[in-house]
Image (cartoon, rainbow, N blue to C red; front, side):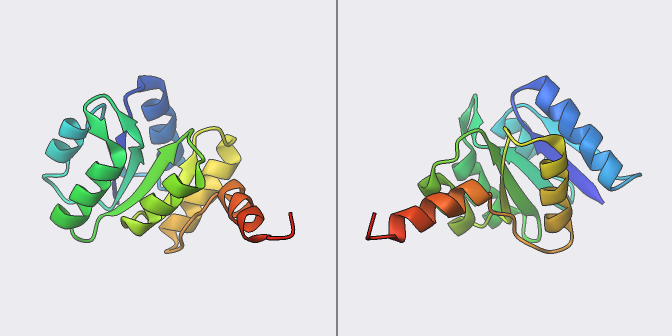
Length: 139
């Protein structure tokens, strides 16, 4: 299995790489700090991309759409500290198979990645709670 971690913070990339190698020992994990670096790394087959929402050279949502058009079969999970319901919905609508808050503890992130690797879709509970409150017209 081959992963690509795209984040402009080296410590985040290293932590996610370590976690991915725990979940899938022997996997190959590539890293990129920018959208341009991510596109260059996608020249080879990548199974799963962990993609930051905010990159120094562009928007992660735009890169998500590009990956969806150019790398058929590559799954993408968005990572962000931004838990705005509309952003989560936009990422999922653009083809993300998950949206993981960077603010979650390691165990939650590991569980979310495990779910995605098993073929599921991860949506943060906070985004669901916000959506549920929006539909409650009695409030």
